[in-house]
Structures are given as C-alpha cells and as structure tokens.
Length: 89
Image 1 (cartoon, rainbow, N blue to C red):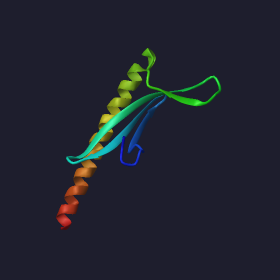
Image 2: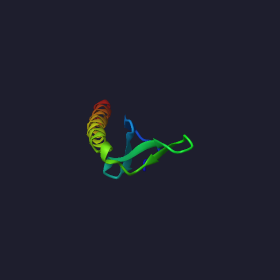
Image 3: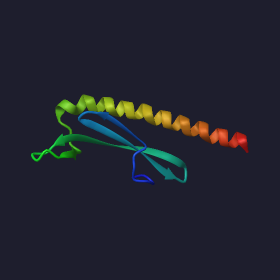
C-alpha cells in the first residue's frame, strides 16, 4: 500500500481501526485508508475483519471522519514543508 508498508497514521476506536497510507505518485502524495474491526478468536488471539457489524457502523463512520481530518492535517504539513524548502532555495 505505501512505500514503507507502514501506515502514516492510525485511528483506533475499539473495535474499529482505520489506517492511513501515503502513496507516492508522479503527481505527489495520495492518501488512502483501510478499515478493520478487531476481535479475539476462540483461542484468544487478536484478529482483524474487514466486515463490520451493524453495531460498528456509526463507530466506523466516526473513525473515517477522524481519518479525513488527519489527512487534511498531513496535506497541510506537506504543503508547509514544500514551501519552506522553496523559500530556502
């Protein structure tokens, strides 16, 4: 998903988790997200599911809203960093 296979940010609203990925393209950085629901299996091991129960839908919506806000912050930070580099040149 990303250059380093590690998300740049994560939003955790148990049991829902949203990971934000930065993907470098010729047009700059593009962000994408993955969403998962965490649960323990019968053996007590943590697992991820891409399916959400009806009880998790509003929590997922909130997590996605927070992810959107985080992406806006990442874009703003990238914009500031690019312009401060240009001013130094």
